[in-house]
Image (cartoon, rainbow, N blue to C red; front, top):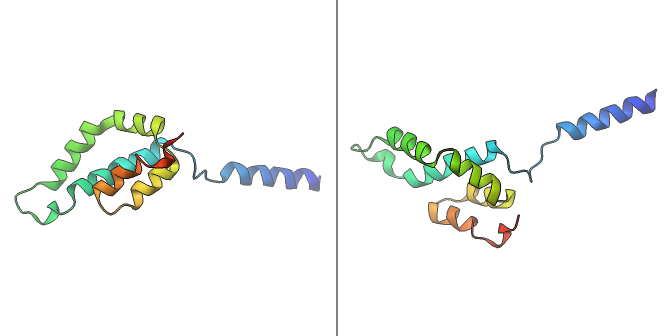
Length: 102
């Protein structure tokens, strides 16, 4: 009985563990939002620019196609690289990096 309980607990632990190497919709959505933020960086201080409207328009134009492409084409390493980037050019370079093989 004790052995079965240990086995069940171990299996639950495995099932609940996050998989950092999995590229899922949530990670790709966060990446899209990060790319938009980098693209709009610096515009927050401009009084003539409605940043929220631009953010919404970019999210809509990138849409589900960006998410699907991300899930098909990018690795978890590339997503982590882009999420850590401090500018758009660096983030875009992550998708062209040598970790591109999926």
